[in-house]
Length: 70
Image 1: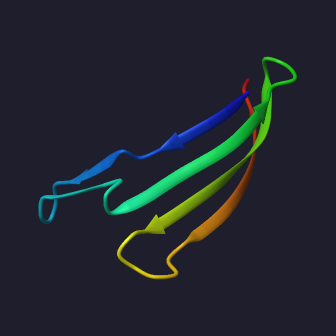
Image 2 (image 1 turned 30 degrees about the horizontal axis):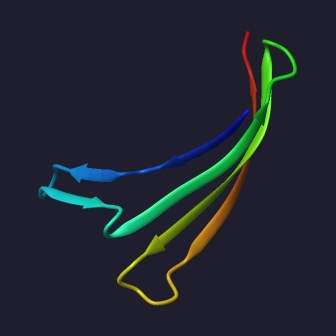
């Protein structure tokens, strides 16, 4: 399975109400997951974040995961 995820907007309600979205920050994730049996999964995800108002604010990270269900 291949997947793409993003945050369209974020609503913070405490301590102050604030809304941020794609117009402020781009959060994008690209990943893949493989499930060889119904009991376990393995995969990886690359996350990319960019704050539009800041120069040189591009950040990236890699997450590898494994899941076992019983």
